[in-house]
Length: 330
Image (cartoon, rainbow, N blue to C red; front, side, top):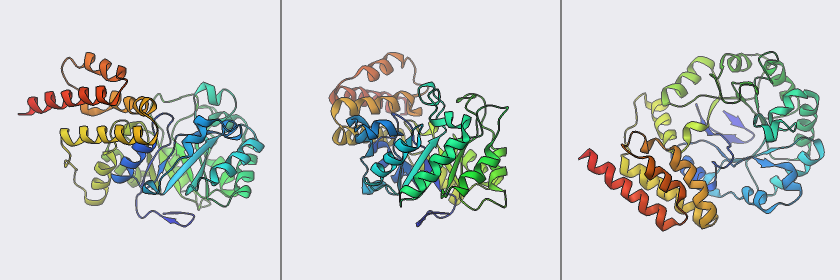
């Protein structure tokens, strides 16, 4: 599989762009464990154009994480074109257009999945951005606005005609948000359409190595994008990669190794951002990490982790958890 001049090999796994999740520390770890491409948090085109510092910081990428994509969202042609030009100066490998975010503050204002209610504007934005930059442009979208408007099979051809170099499809409508089950049958229809020649990347409900393997086998997608299942679990890419490549399950990491990785993510974020925001970014992963599931009477410890305001405080809590877990396994 290729996007532009980037060769990904067979059955690549991508880290989905996610607000307050795919910070630089997390991206570096996911890349280390086998993610073929990672994405920054999605970026508001209007905020980029206005030079909002918090948004500009999201454009920081490192060579260690390449290939890396930067995803932008907006609701008009001019701001999306200008934002794409700004993003190109950060030298990403891919510029991705977000036409899939379902949250009210984005889709409700006509951006993200809101574009599924205005396909002509979506296509106009896509054509204009492709013409404005030399970096490969890709799109991420959903099956349609609702179950009554499943437009993806036609929309995929239209977006391809605009000049995009890959299409990611989340197997839900905007109306579904993140509820119910992702429908991969329409993703498979797009991939098997003989008129489609760009790579099709499937996304939605890929939570285990077995589900990743089945997505490639059943639907023939060129790549699989993994989102929420990565929270606090960057090593999931190694687990998936091992099963895809060898057919066996990966059990190489113990509890202590996983806690070390979460602490490393904390250190990277604090070094690359600052202590306050680095902790905020990392706490979300700690709250969701499967490492801590099933620990008896863990509620108060979880609350303490989420309230920790310094690296030393959070590290001490994590080390105490490590001791408890290792004692239980002795």
